[in-house]
Amino acid sequence: MRASDLPLSYNAVDIVERNLPQRADKTALLTADREVTFGQLQAELNRAGNALRGSGLRQGECVAIALPDSVEWVSAYFGAIKIGAVALSLNTLLTPGEFAYMLRDARARIAIVHESLLRKMADIRGQVPSLRQVVVVGASGGGASDAGTSDGSESGGEQTDGDISWDAWLAEQPGHCAAATTHREDICCLNYSSGTTGEPKGILHAHKDLPLTAALWGVGVLGLTESDRTFAAAKLFFTFGTGGNLIFPFYVGASAVLLAGSPRVAANVLETVDRFKPTILYNAPTGYAMTLAVDGFQEKYDLSSLRLCVSAGEALPAPLWERWKDATGLDIIDGIGSTENYHIFLSNRPGDIRPGSSGKPFSGYELRLVDDDGTDVPAGDVGNLWVKSETASLSYLHCFDRSRATFRGEWLVTGDKYRIDEDGYYWHAGRSDDMLKVGGIWVSPVEVESTLIAHDAVLECAVVGERDQANLVKPTAFVVLTEGQEPGDAMAETLTAHCFANMAGYKRPRRIVFVAELPKTATGKIQRYKLRSEPE
Ligand code: 3UK
Image (cartoon, rainbow, N blue to C red; front, side):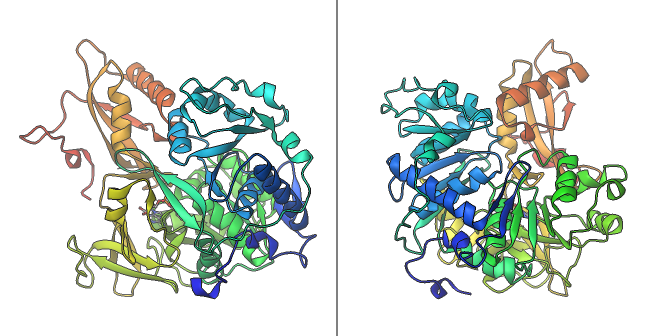
């Protein structure tokens, strides 16, 4: 499939509505507390679209979604897309400062927020002048007074229209909503991704990218069909989750299972599989490793509904693939994806898997391995991976320099190093920057270092990736303490608590090593490579 196969005027709400009327009564979403059919989902997303319009959101404007995976997340997302707005999916684990930056950068006018995240929102309301309304989703269905955020315009922001509960917001809305006429290349969604330094970059995707990735990888590689039922431990706010657990299943008329709780608790994932019987499971390598660590999980939980597993976010080591296969009998399809490409662009495929590798190119994605001058490297050498596709974003939002470095005409620079073996399988060979993928999520060593250094006891520090028993990367901090400070477990605990308080907890160093000094060059630059236990 090519972008030109879609009509010029295309709205990605089609991903839901293509299932109507023939599957109106089929289950679209299953969650612990709600189950909705395609017909019910359409009515709810229509009400959300009307409510967004009623709140003054116009085509091209941004609505932020900060919710756990839920029917409301999906209705808000497709409601926004249907009226031609831009759905900004927020990572719910981020700090208020990161929320504020993203909402400001995207000029979000409305934020749909779970009540458990209102505290974060309350702290930053005054820093987001564009924000006019907060819609609160939560068990209490609470309404404006619960939010406690209504006076948040101290830095001269516009007068807000006040907060409202999701239920009240949708209550009066009709179940029909006219779709905005959108160009297939209009932007429909926005996700932020972090870099080594500086602020996170907004990655824009167009309506066309959703059906295209669904057709190219979801159908073309994974072979999804209407009889599948997907479940992703990866959250909907990552495009790994949005694509794998929403866009692709709906594209073929399959159902999706959503987990509101943390996927970092292996039991949550196992219970969800046991209860809802998905056929496809998406997880990051860490998720598979954590599951394998649960004693006797195969006996305790019924996994027999699964036909296939998918791994992405970071490389899946071959021994982990083998252990999963031995324990469950299931194959894992490892594919590398990126938010810039929307989803997976190089992948193993059912029946053609080389454990430890990222598989082979597939239709829709052309790949090159080049040296630092952009010249193709000789066969077998490690090179920088460039990708050409029609699902790539065209630029970052408000990042001229970083956009020019990444989006080079038809080619997208991934930042990944790869080698091709004699049989044509691609092997990940690290990053060309210092970025770490921890549990499938970006961690910038520079950000962790800046957080640690802000603590009085820390004189200087360096953060590097270290491999754990499952051969997966975790951040380790080498710390030099200020005079008079005592190294030891108590200090490590103090610094870990400091990290939890000042940045998203998953970025914290899992090991803190106290050293008298850090290795440095003659010019005083920290030699991170000397701290890494293995050469890159
Ligand atoms: C790394 C991998 C080796 C790689 C993603 C599937 O991870 C996703 O998107 P992000 O923007 O990060 C992209 C970067 O992550 N990576 C991802 N998958 C693999 N490295 N093997 C893998 N299988 O450095 C890449 O450049 O967070 C993954 C689908 C959608 C996604 N957004």
